[in-house]
Image (cartoon, rainbow, N blue to C red; front, side, top):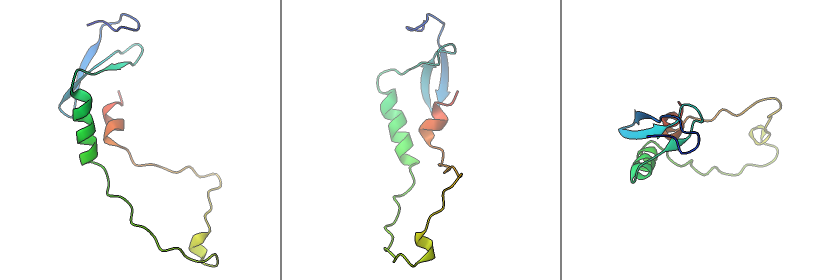
Length: 86
């Protein structure tokens, strides 16, 4: 199958049991009917539990102060991020 964007031959890869067609040139991704639903279901299975609500503390509590200068927050990888990382 040809890429609808640039005409390059699409490559088929298997990610989590779902065949994904992608273009190695423009990095476009094409899914067949039902494949997106399968990916979403599998991603939800790997989702972490929701965070527990925390009790609000006063301003004098040292844990209330946050220092973020020059630091980047590192996020956890997701299943979808792993799937679409070619």
